[in-house]
Length: 335
Ligand SMILES: CNc1ncnc2c1ncn2[C@@H]1O[C@H](COP(=O)(O)O)[C@@H](O)[C@H]1O
Image 1 (cartoon, helix red, strand yellow):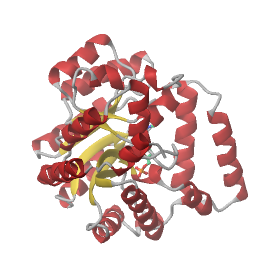
Image 2: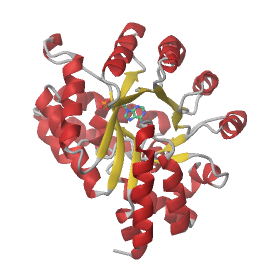
Image 3: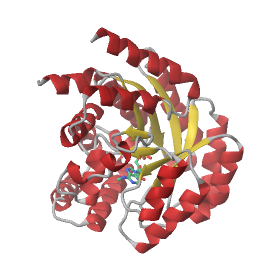
Image 4: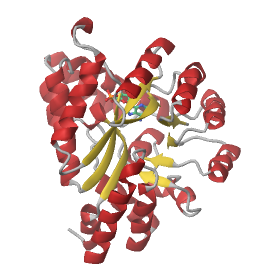
C-alpha cells in the first residue's frame, strides 16, 4: 500500500452523510434477498447501471433501494446492518459518524417506528467505546406531511442521540416545498437539518434548489446541479456541503473525479465534509474517497488534515467537536 493511501486510512475521520441501509454489505444484501427472481433482478440492475444517463442511473439506484427495503423485514436485520456498518467504519478509522435513516415500522405496524429507532440507538451504544455515533432521521420525498411530522416527533423524542432531520429519497419527486412547515418547525426546535439538493440536471430541480437555499438548512447534501447564482449564494452564506465523490461520480456520469465540484468549493475554503453516501451499494469507503480526491486534485497531507479539522465544526452534536479535533491533533503529532 502506498504511503498516501495508508495515511488516508489511518487518519481519524468524520462521516456525516451515510444512509444506514445504503451501507449494507453486498454479501448481507445478497443473503437477505430470499428469491432467485430478486437475485437475478439485482444482477440485472448492476449490469444496467453501467449504460444509463443521470436520470436512468438514479432510477436504477432507487430500484435497488426498493429491492433492499423489501428484503429488510425485521429488527434483527436492522440491528445486523447497523452492527456491520459500524464495524466497517471502525475498521476504516472513522471516529465520529452521523448515520441517517428513514424510520419504518414492521409487521403492519405491530412493531412501531419507535422500535426501529431504538434498535439502531441500542446497537450504536454497544460500540460507543470504539466509535461515536449519532442518528439523523430522514424524511423521504415521497412521504406525506403527516408522516414527516411523525418523523420530526420521533427525532424530538430521541434527542440527544438523534441530532438532526434529513430530506432524501427519489429526487424526481420535488416535494421540499410541501415539507417546509415541518423543516421550519425543526428549526424552531433547534434541531439541525440537512437537505439533499441539486441531484438531477433539470429545470424543476434548479427551481427547488432556490427554495431549499431560502430555508438555509444547517448542511446541504450533494449540490451536483446548480446555477451560478446558487453556487455564489452557497459560498457567500457559507452553507456547509456534504460531498460524496463515488456516488456523485456514478450518478452524474462524470468521466473522472477531476470534473467533480469538490475543488471549486475546496479552493475557496468552503466548509466541506467528504462522505460516502451509500458505502455498501456504491462499494466505497471514506478513506478511499479521500484518497481519490487527494490524487485527483493533488492535495497535500497538510491540506487534508486541515479539511478534516474544519469538518469537525460541521458535526451536529456540537459537544463532540472537541473530542474529534483532539483525536485528529493527537494523530498528527504522532506521525
Ligand atoms: C444517490 N444519493 C441519494 N439521494 C437521495 N436519497 C438517497 C440517496 N442514497 C440513499 N438515499 C435514501 O436512503 C435510503 C436508504 O437508507 P435508509 O433506508 O433510509 O436507511 C434510500 O431508500 C433513499 O431514500
